[in-house]
Length: 273
Image (cartoon, rainbow, N blue to C red; front, side, top):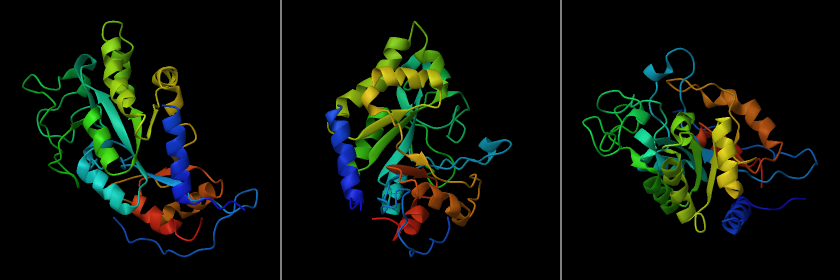
């Protein structure tokens, strides 16, 4: 029988990476799940994610729930997250790696501009100093990648970086690529020996570059998506995810990612060891 605890799994992830460089909570009772082999399921590490609406014109309903700021990190920690996914964008000409989910500054104070069209610290439309304009994290400012990694580390969370597809034009531009990649890679390299960091991108070209530049830090099978309910505002009930959560848990993933961190943590109680 497998007897590793969630803490053991977390320690194993730490060793591997270091060596390589809302709604009412669900009931907390159930029989432990069994893997296909018949062994007891080890509790997966839990990564918190911020929901983004589906359907037409999602930006009009987005409440900026992504854990890209300290208050959101505190929430995720209090809800039982072991790690969080953050969103990495690049400002104009790749001059600053910043933590922001949306293509544009929609959801922030100030004039609406694409992140890749504005500077971090100069210009009347600069990104530095802008704050979230709606949702639970209203008033929180945009943070740099370095700041965010340090904030995640201080809370004892695993950092999972999604390099957003919007960064590809500058990352692949012969004029700006070297500096732009340095903006992303240097903060990771500076911390990877003492901090658990994983990386990935939904853009195939960026993902291939990450595999070349940070081969030991790729997300791989970690942070498997476990929700089945499409996010909306206000958030749908957690219970629509239950069947999918159970199915994924039965496959004994090393870690999972969900929009329902608090509810998943409560649901998981008693189902694994």
